[in-house]
Length: 263
Image (tube, rainbow, N blue to C red; front, side):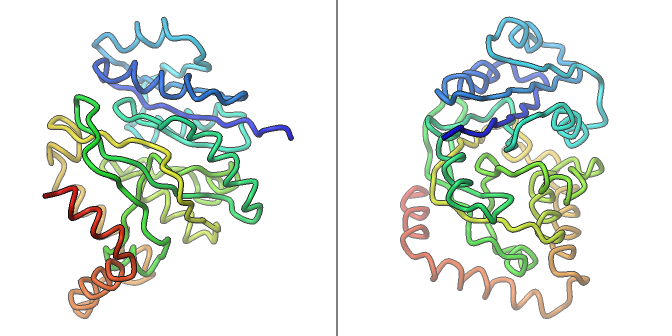
């Protein structure tokens, strides 16, 4: 059986410390048809030299852009694969991820997007704990009760087109909004059990530093309202924690694993 081409877009900007590991995690997949597109709008560290010396990359997009979401849109515009995914320069794909992605789509021909699981790692590549995408649900997103592992999100070109691409105005959680836009457009998104990617959490990352916390809070409210199809209401302050509790009770093994990892 011919395996589909998978296009991975890596967004690079002054991440020379972690970029080699990200590039290697794609190159070493052992998957026969990878198109690895790297977008770097103007790094001032060693990132561009690393990109120029790395094998197995192409095309490379070096034009200035209007932020991360715009950079990803530019990368996907150059993609020719049947399946798309994206990877930040400080994250990694896990071994065997792309073979698992191809298998997941083959087993779910009616799905145009999948969401898998992964692991949380630190700046030294130590695995902190497993992370899981919870059951895909617009209602759970609207109530702030869904966990999403971006490194495990892969989709067909039609799903990206249906969503209208990534929202370039979003500078904090463009990946999460892309998933919501797919769901709002009627794209069928399937959960898969495979661990596909590693999300790196460290002091200088957007998540770890909290430097965009205010903007992120505003973006998340807007995305929740988009998922619900209405403004947040007073009752949601009661519904949201109950829905989160119900989700955790429905997956006791995952909940216990997460609690153990934090002890």
